Image (tube, rainbow, N blue to C red):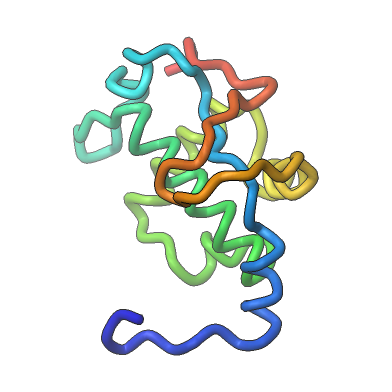
Length: 129
């Protein structure tokens, strides 16, 4: 456990265990997609699809554990909120709707969370910038 981190509560641990098997949701399985620049932040920083997808999936996990909207309220910096807005455009839905859909997905068997299977999000619009 990282320094300063607290152990999950019993309820958080139960929720974490219920998330086992959920896939990493992406906008496209095309190998070049994750390197595509999909947006630009207000400070001029260009954002690649890979970062947008990672942030979206992380926000799903946080909201699943701590309740819908928890990522926005408690964790996200202003910059991350900008990227989350890009993600919601690319995935074609807001995070609260995405959370409901993600939690309903079929659980898959895999052994390495970091390399969990990627599943294309239905309704994703990877051509949108």
